Length: 147
Length: 189
Image (cartoon, rainbow over the protein chains, first blue to last red):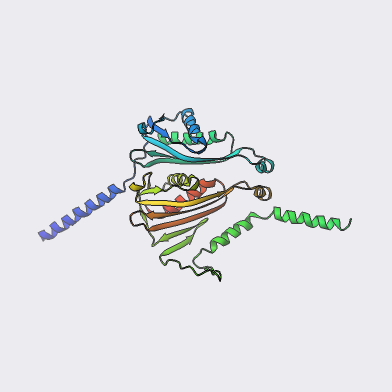
C-alpha cells in the first residue's frame, strides 16, 4: 500500500515537472517595449527609413533612435512601396494621389523575437510616404504607451 | 443613312455590355475556380497530362478566398518559435504584421536557427490597369500569395495555404492577414 503511494507520488511529480517544462518552453514572449529604448532603423526600400525616423520624431514616440546597430536594443526592419498615380488613374478615377504600402517589424536584437509589427495601406495617400510613415509611428507610440 | 443608325446602335450596345460586365459574374468565375478545389468535385486531367496523385494524408478545405491544406490535422503548439523566410516584395513583413493583428499565439523570431517552424512562400501583386479602371471603375489590385509551414527539425510541411484576392481593398495587407487568420486555425491555444 505504501509502495503504491510512493509510486503514484513519483509519477505525479514527474508529470508536474514535464508540464512545467513544457509550459516554460512555450511561454508567451515579453511584448513590452520600454520607454526610451534604443531603436535602430534598418534601411528600407525607397528611403522609407528616413521618413520613418522623421515621423518617430514628429509623433514624439518615446524611443531613442540610434544609427549604430550595436548600441541598439531593438531594430526596425520592413518594406515599403509607392505607386505614383498613373495617367489612367488621374483621367478616369480623377485621383492623382499615390498608392502607399508599408509594413514594419520591431524586433528585440538580443532575443531575436519580434515584439511588434504593423502594416499600412493607403489607396490615395495625400502626403505619400510621409503619411504611411506617420501612421507607423503613431501605432508604435500607441503600442509603447498602451502597455 | 438608314443603315448607319442600327449599326451605331449595335456598336453602342456592345460597348455598354462590355462596360457594364457585372462584377458578380467575375466573382462567380472566381467561385467556380474555387469550387474545383472542393473534395467532391474532382477535375479531370487533360488527355496529354499524366494524372497527378494527391498524397492521401493531405486534406483540402476551401475557404472564402483561398485554399487550405493541413497534413494529418497537424497542430502547432502556442508560442512556438516561427521564422518567416524572406519573400518577394517583402511579403514576410505583411505576414508578421498579420500574425500580430490577428493575435496568433506564435513567437516570431528573426533568426532561423532559433526557430522550430519556418513559414515560406511566394506572393504576387497585380496593379489595376487602365482597362480595369475604365470598364469596371475599380483601382484595387489583385493579390496572390501562397505559403507553407515546415517543421525545421523533421523538414515536414505541416500546413499550406494559398489566397487569391480580386480587387483587394488593402493590397498585400489583406493577403498577409488572410494567411495569418488561417495559420491561427492550426495553432493550439
